[in-house]
Length: 205
Image 1 (cartoon, one colour):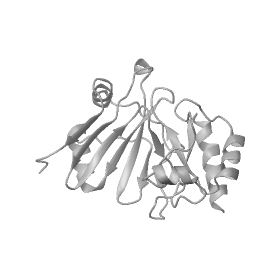
Image 2 (cartoon, helix red, strand yellow):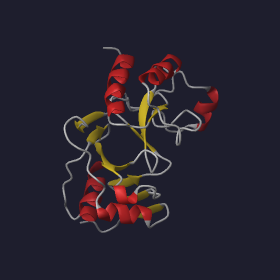
Image 3 (cartoon, one colour):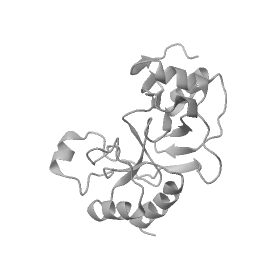
């Protein structure tokens, strides 16, 4: 199966779950404009269409047209109040430790996938009572990793997209295996009651 076929097959499934999808630049920037390559310092991770934060993709035909223009593009899930989803990006052992502390050790059986480089990402649904709220990005880090809560104005690169290392993102628990959990109260309160947070988390041991 070609890369384009894998993207189309995955997007067909994602659209059944009403994902707001957007094209993301290729992992090696092949096929991207000179302007994009000058501005983008995150190959494989940056949305490439104007208006992507507010324009939903609801058709596989649109995906096919994107692929004709950008055959090596990655695919992203738009986050925030418009799409109804937020994500938690957990990087390395330090990120896992931070999430364990913040969550009180609770394990969440929700949609999740591996990110190349020893990371994982959790997807949560915005609870009905919080629809329309702005979910701000919050980031916590230490010397061994970081944990980022992603929301309004962001997108989360989805499997089977390719990381800049050449490795693919891959599902741990896919949308076909379980329901997406509502974001727990502590995440909701943290994200909607704060401005963009970036915190160094010391003393984790």
